[in-house]
Image 1 (cartoon, rainbow, N blue to C red):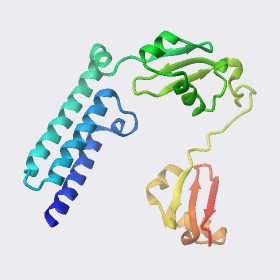
Image 2 (image 1 turned 120 degrees about the vertical axis):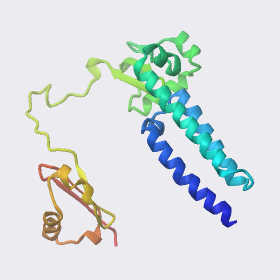
Image 3 (image 1 turned 30 degrees about the vertical axis):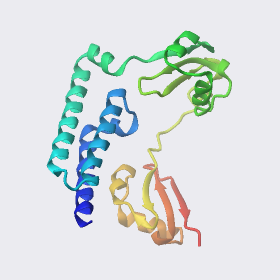
Image 4 (image 1 turned 90 degrees about the vertical axis):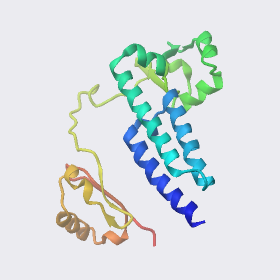
Length: 223
C-alpha cells in the first residue's frame, strides 16, 4: 500500500514537470498529435501505479521519450510549414457571408447542431450575422461578424480612452498576493493603507483587484 502511494506521488510530480516542459499549449489547445501524446502519457503513468511489479524506471523512460519526441516535433513544425500542415492540418472556412459550406462540414464530420452550438458559445444566435467562421486545427470555431453587426467601440465614436492597465489580484481569499504588485504599481504597505481606508482587513476580503491607474474593486467575504 505504501509503495503504491509513493510511486503515485512520484509519477504525479514527474508528469506535472514534463507537461510544463512541453508547453502551455498542451493544456489549453491540443492539436491531434498532442492529444495522442497526452493520452499515451496517462496510460503509461497508470501502469506502474496499478502494478507494483512493473519497474518505475521503465515508465519514467517511456514518458521522457514521448516528451522528447513531442518537443522535437514541435520544433520541426516551427521550422517547416509542410511539416506543420502534415501534423496539425489547416484551418478551414466553413461559413462565408452567413452561408455554411455543406461539403466542407461533411468532410469534417460536423453537424449543423455542432456549428450552431459553437456559435452560441460566442454569443451569436443568428448565423446570418456571421461574415466568416473558421474551423481551427484544434477544433475551436473562430468567428468574424459582418461589419454591420460589430459592436461600436470608443474609437468608432472618437472617444478618447486611456489604458488603465490589467486588474491585478492583490488579495485572494484573505491572503495578500505579492507576485502581482509590480504589474499594478503597488506594494504591501500601500495596499494595507488602502484596505484600512476601506475599513476592513485582508482576512475579510474574498477578492481584491487593483489596476495601475488606481482603480480598486473589493468583494468582501459573506459572514
